[in-house]
Image 1 (cartoon, rainbow, N blue to C red):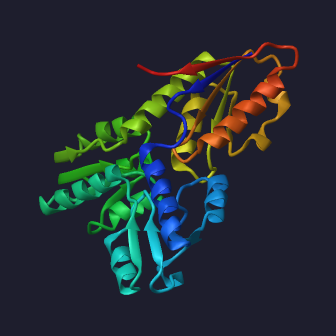
Image 2 (image 1 turned 45 degrees about the vertical axis):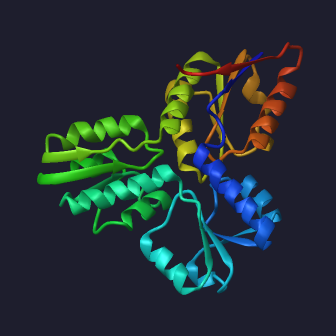
Length: 291
């Protein structure tokens, strides 16, 4: 059986940066508090907890004069203000690409463009962006876009992990409703590559495994993209979820992973697939990369 591993799978640059910043901070401070989950991967969160990175759910839980890390998704300005009032040391691990979206939203508002965010209204990244402007439109579905009234002006930004197909769809609808529209394609380049690679790989193999937290937005999008072209697609968090019966009459397997999935989990999954595939078959590892 051939196992094809997506080169783009696993930690994106922003997540890797946030994790490294948190680990470095524990070497100096001992315990660092993450406001919300540092990344959306339960297994990696557990590993980080053992290193001294503790999750808190709200500013109210913070002990004054401790160290708090802002995760890669970013937060609204009011959260930073509340943290400063708690007299804590703030380590801002907001991904620079997310920070750029926040800045674009602010700039659009200063130019008197009502701000529209394409993305998941419950996702911390979108909540953080929305907190930088007044009363933004947050559009998650085609129906949401269709409900936007005709307007003289509108400025649009995207969640970094937005499905590029939804951006195209939303744009095609909005341009007929808005007289003057500014659209910033702020989907992260790494996200685009990861999604394109997942789509390509899913078309070329008999079975796809997508690894990542069930609470991970970008991993879920990879799964949906894969499932659309390959019905034998499975979203798992760890190797323990893999079932041997998936591989009956399967000659090729594709494996990719979300931006919050550490390499050690990917290797465990690949190892488990190799173990299963050795039932009388030779194993061949390969790598997929879009150009």
